[in-house]
Image (cartoon, rainbow, N blue to C red; front, side):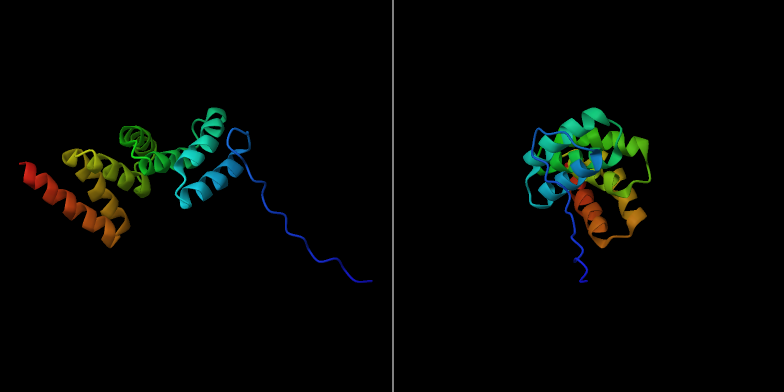
Length: 140
């Protein structure tokens, strides 16, 4: 008798306003953000974060969504908490530096950008440091 082919089941699609486990919310929000849809991502993230307010993955995605929406103070607040919880989180540290830079808070941004560049060795992070140093130098 012929065997039935294996059927792959895809994760359910979560629509804004519905509740789901944090893993599904994370995947769905990440997909929205990769498609440059931060409002939709936030609609998925907020209910999940109500159930799991300390989930670092969900909080990181919320910070990313805030950055995409240019809600820079909300992004900086979220990222400040993430960096305080895990000072070795290079992504959060770099993103915090960028959020502060976009608010023209160059002196506050530089330590975070420098640490992120040192932690990752990423040339783009090093370029960000140079750019913000120049911007900060213009204000002195």
